[in-house]
Length: 296
Length: 296
Image 1 (cartoon, rainbow over the protein chains, first blue to last red):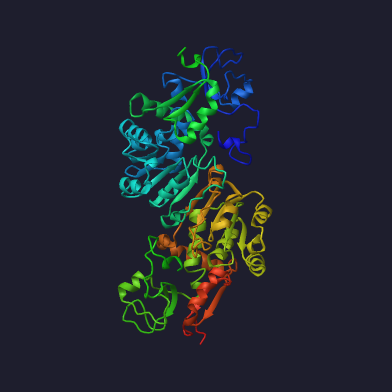
Image 2 (tube, rainbow over the protein chains, first blue to last red; image 1 turned 90 degrees about the vertical axis):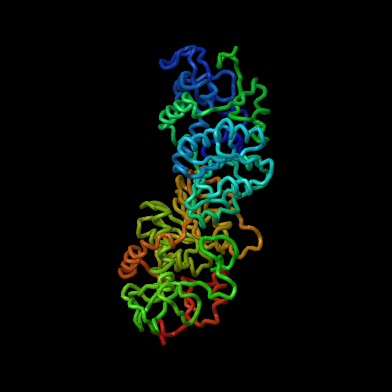
């Protein structure tokens, strides 16, 4: 969302001033003349930050509107593990990162929406999972609840020492959500033929100075490693396969999820800013209507 | 060589103070008790910057000592297209860059040892080849003699405008020998799913400040692109295949080569420094003995 507020070419056009902010959301159908959607059904799609969305059939298709099956996960899980963050984690880790059993996978933003699923998937695939997160509480949760092998608290300081301790054989896959100094620290700790997945760079989005490029990028040469960008929308035709696998993991308890729900449409700016201070804990969800989750 | 003079971990140990500088070279066997080598034969291998090399059988194996066949190329071509620079170009472009016919390949240091072969190979594989080099003379040679589609003179200024003009559909493969600002300019001009081959970063080797990381690296995300490092030694078992193909191209005239020969052992420091000012034109060769090339 922060990137969509910038002018210039990106993977998707910016959101214009005065337009409804683009956002994936869950909604309940209030009224419909569309054969696929009936009142009362829960749907997910790019509904925007608004209390009500009115969509033509064509707009609904463009918004990727689909019914959701609450037997597979709760509505907030459909915004998390079974939604865009989960899809990003699944295809970014498995398709781009290509981890093999026994390898070490490091993920930044480990307690966030994408990071929590990346680390758990890495464990499920037989890898050592090491998170990087801000603060003791998040790190403890990532290790004790999600089962990561270790988590480095970047707010406590020494990421370098943490990587050395917890990745004794180097980093085979790094899933990067943050950029900046942490990316450089991981570059300095790569294993041979490592893969870095560039998913985001939240440390850089609010810069008033130019983006800090990774000074240690020549480690890619030394370690014959690669750094590759990904955008989740490219994998849309394979989302159903990923949802099936992730829902199975949720059901059998191998995968846990945490959502951080902020209540009230008016709290959107405050909620968004929490991502930049790191105050959110899990997938940040803005609940704009009580009806959707059945919690009225 | 410049990198081997730095302390610290790299893809190969540094050369110690007082040691013979590591260097690939061509020599003529003066005396031998080795069954594979007879006096008078021309050999290539890691002979070091010295007038005479004395090697045990084991050292000869470690130096990759092999006889060269001057029917395939001249001794200086065996240090260029048929040697490490050619191998670097071949495997870096084809294995890491994976160009497809019709794509646009950009290479920096285009008139240098590696660059000249990268661009010509790109043309042979049906790609558009765009060089980046310093000065009118080099650019003219690259286009008029080597057959590149275009060459951008970075010393004349505007690399950005040159890339825009000569890569109208964006850059599919960038073979980077220089790093720094030029890498950033190319990052800003990537095509979707572009591949960047990190072969070197000569603009950064003499830095007294930290390496300048590529500020535009998030273009990898926007364009689902990858940046990958390579070291030529990894492909040693496939060198014979590459030599055969490149020698064929030399013979039938599809591939040209240029070597810039500096005569005299004592001129080594001066010669090496020419790489950093860009004064060399083609593969820089230091000739330490007249006998080798038969030019006595």
